[in-house]
Length: 281
Image (cartoon, rainbow, N blue to C red; front, side, top):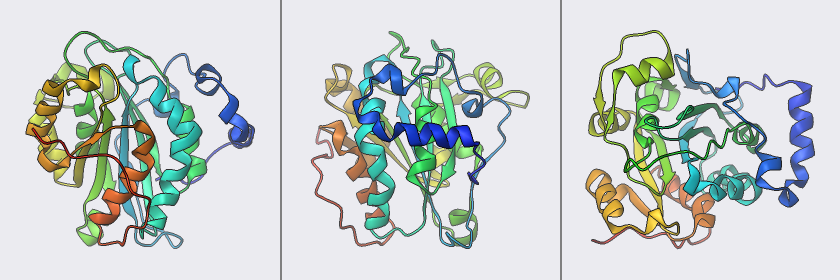
């Protein structure tokens, strides 16, 4: 869990960003390669822990596709969406949410297919991680992106007090407009994560592992060219069933996530209605 170990310069950057509604994508996302703080190499665990201030944490992972077709979505989240996600979750009845931001790319094509933040309890600290993201804008013509890396990281590299103390699963949301790649080779994991023992995994195996600790959802962005494919939506439906959420407008993401968390945590959701639909095939 993030403990506020940020320099004065980090906070100055955050203060300066208060006017970022007028800034361009390049001005907000200034990384030209992966930020060292978000590099998963050598990371053993990201922890979501209770504290005096937050005694009943609910752990949430948001894993966003940052490949080329999704370039405008992170920009929107920084400018409009993300500042409201934590507030909307709290408003929905979840008093102690902790949210970990991940960025995913394409492990077959990209230099930085996985970027990881920390579990945070405030919009301010979460914003820092989002604006540290390297928008590689890659991907390739290989019929998918690396959403399965989010399942891998959640299943093998997170530790949650909500699950370990209270047997309550966290929530994992992948957001994107492509299918998931089908396989994750051991050699890819070794290069990405560093020294250790690895094996080849299928997407289904990693999804099952993540489901041990998380309610797993995919928010499929329908409005992009890739996202309009019914074949892609059918593939996600086969994998996730009712946990596939079709998002008609990406602006709704900051409302969809709080509603799902509230509805599956016994909280009384009071966030605004959403236009996302569950696909019928």
